[in-house]
Length: 130
Image (cartoon, rainbow, N blue to C red; front, top):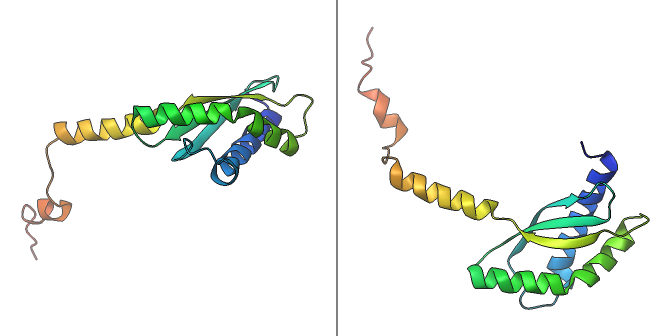
């Protein structure tokens, strides 16, 4: 189980990185990015920042390169926000959860039969009597 301190640090890192991506990073490669969650190691020396990036594979790859090139700048921002002996070294990971959910929804739409409106199914089969 992760400690409360580690969880608070992860949340602070998520906030700092999210705001820096929105406001401070001027790299044109970095756009359409959402920080989904952050994992911090128990010794608080490393942090994995999971990001969801909109666009095709090329845009995602370029955006990850832009994020990785701004790692030092982001670590500096993090060091100002959290007061620890070591500033966690951040590493960006692509979060495929959203893409997988969209792909699964498409597959389910193709496989499952289309339904009519729910109110029309049950009305005629249950006659109302007195």
